Length: 495
Ligand code: BES
Ligand code: MN
Ligand code: ZN
Image (spheres, rainbow, N blue to C red):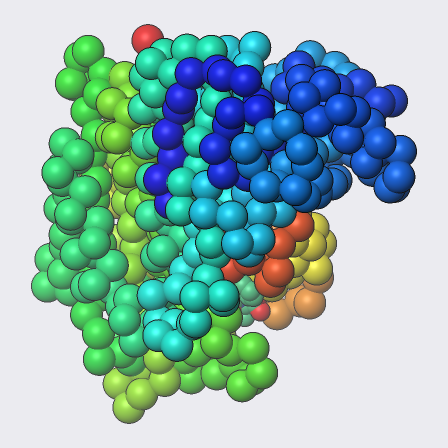
């Protein structure tokens, strides 16, 4: 879909299907008011004849009204008549797209006279996220099964300024889409080497990308990560991305680390068949870090940022790791692998240790689809954050609020840490008690951060959405974390 900005003109001349905003209590936006006038009062009559109340996301179709070129006008609810924010513009555009995508309209004119350039740019961002669709393997869709909208035209006061402002938003949308694509790809297509290859392509944005294979990781002593991948025919990979956007290229960086299990069968502790296909998105943490790096480089963020991806496939095989095996991590700490399905923490143990050892970052944030337990606790709208640093946690929560990506802080009680102790090694990878599974997974990770300020996001519940509840998040790969972390960087670590 092509998204463009054109100068504000009369609603009667706007091409395609026009979309206008109407608020609660019968308050019409400037464009909706104009539409009402040129159609001889059709907008107010249509509202009166329907249950349209102007609630956010409510829509009302006005077909073949006189006085306008457009055959279809869409009235979109915008909620209470408060200040019109960027988020409101984003949501207006996304709702308009969702309501019109299958309507047959090939062009949409989103009426935003009076909005700022940045609001117009954020509207374009909303339309782009809304129009995301992973359809590369659908070869038999007939035209009427595909979205009809080809051009999304934002009608605004200063299209030039809007276009300029949309460069930033465009980079962020690129990042979210990059993550969504990675998360959506099946595991026969996206395995560690293929994932690494796709990230390597981001070098064209000015990122430095190194790829470590099994030989290099073995030299580094990453027995914990390598143990997870040893049952797979696919080679494990560690991807190290560096974005040096700060004035001083040697300034201490900040770092993000992602769990990238391209498929999680559970290994020898094999998962039940039902729903196992979901484990193609067990690389959502690494996917988010990759998307974040794409966004930061795309918008030339003024910060030094490291992104590390631990990429493995967890398979049962003659060479697979067994329950009871003891592995030695890069930190030197030994781990008794009681359950081969608790593999994400084993991958992150080495990725986190490597990150702090090599880069000495200001802080590390890891993202991982780590536990089913967090889905029990927080469901599908909230990720968990665990942190050893209150400022970092607060900054993450503030960013979560600003970007509408749900996040809830969870505790790291020292008493639970003891549950990881075992007689045979320095620790075991599961506790053996049934409660607090997401917390004890976080406490396991904490043993590998070596006192660097750290936060862990358990995103098992939010990386994938069955169906859609939010117009900018169609079903499937969400791209959770890209917006949130981009905001964390922008608000706290640039300039
Ligand atoms: N990748 C899973 C966690 C997961 C479950 C993510 C459902 C998304 C949806 C993880 O590797 C796992 O298998 N965790 C186990 C841990 C258990 C063995 C201690 C779990 O949560 O059951
Ligand atoms: Mn697992
Ligand atoms: Zn997993």
